[in-house]
Length: 122
Image (cartoon, rainbow, N blue to C red; front, top):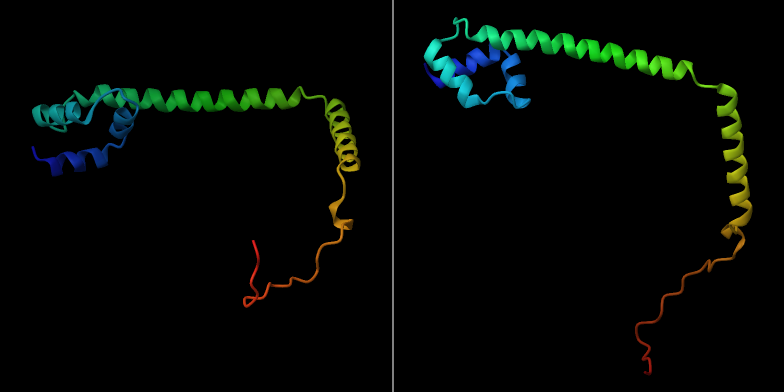
């Protein structure tokens, strides 16, 4: 079997890429199996079963994550959140009163470049 045929087989079975990237197998091992048994062997059923298990596990984890997030949001007391935001707003206003406002200080409006022909003493 050639490398080109193996690449075509992998492109038809993208779950093999997930097996390699997750560290469960290596490209060398997959190529050796492909070279010894071919693409229609029952050896590949082991990898296909893992693929379906990963898909159902991922979906169940995703559903569990959404349920946990929904339960967490459902348990939030909105009045305590509002009180916290109000106290944060008051703290920001207090800091604004402490920090001096630099916009009232006059700046030099005119920039005067020094003359290039003048000699300066040390």
